[in-house]
Length: 77
Image (cartoon, rainbow, N blue to C red):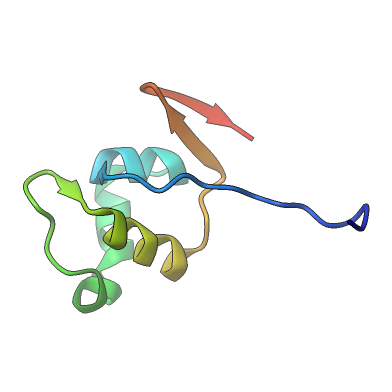
């Protein structure tokens, strides 16, 4: 592997809008606005949660977040 290559691994699981917003470092309200152009592609949430496939579409549409959530704490990479 080249020294300049960086590998990022993001474990996909169900997330709430608040968790996704936290990963991107923005408010729930701002994240909701960011997702509006992708509503047709993402689809409706099931209860409070986006499914694994919906989270995958969000990450593909907006790029991977710089933060991850692990056991309710935020780890900044």
